[in-house]
Length: 166
Length: 241
Image (tube, chains in turn blue, brown):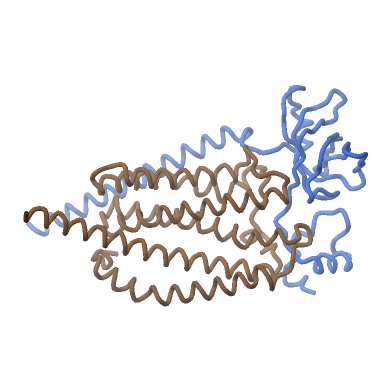
């Protein structure tokens, strides 16, 4: 009798486990489907190439992201012009206002605004995006000096790989 | 697992561990904070604001880890009816909510000087961490929503399991979608993108946060067990009168 109730408790436990894991699997699948379906609206910004391939309505506010094209920055008081590039396509951006401290040529940037009639982009907000690389100024200096990293470029992808140690 | 089902046994082990754990945690915090503030260089781009990372990243890691632990407790509670899981889940949820809040607040403080904004609606990482915070709050609310503690614990456990789908979304949001938040620096193809001089304080602080979590969990579980004992004693006394 005792053995029987023990094994039925075990069976119930197994049933509960199967139920919990099954429900979790179904929920995970449903979430994956929803996220895939909403893929487009989940991105924070579009690249210049995506914008060129699928231009939004002229008055719709969108965000574009990419690198500030080296040599394209012109400042005239608060009026700023620069180009955002994804190294395939680039787009001219005009903006009036303060730029974040990390804004510089060759760095990642996200601009929010609308497409202007002339194919340029009129931004009303510019945010700096920084990458996942962290290093002391001396290391950055050394990398640039050794020619492994050129001014205005994104930092080398594997700056701390063993073979690159100074 | 059944070995820890006896609260007295759990308490004996926890009480023996606690002084050592708190000593290690204090040591890690002292070393970590020293490295974070004095013995590590500023970043070549961000300057001294990079030091926010030494609080922000460990807090965010612990927010995810605590939720994973909460989900394990939930499974133990629902499937194996482990008596201690109920106590541990109730004890862990507010700690996890605290870590998530710290990650959100320090992220906001870090975002202003680097990105130029406190918060960005529509960023998948920021939004999914906010959702994680709401799951913690929901868990705490459900735990206390019933007169019968066990029913509350069970409802909260179901919610904890539902929220598990959010964990991979938080972790991989920066890889799946374009985000303002930068991608992972350590667990990435090609190895860590953090200079060793900055990785030291980060890992020390991560260890300190983990130790802090374990100490708090033991303290809170101990208090919860004492509360339950007190309650059953009160019921017993009331029956006698």
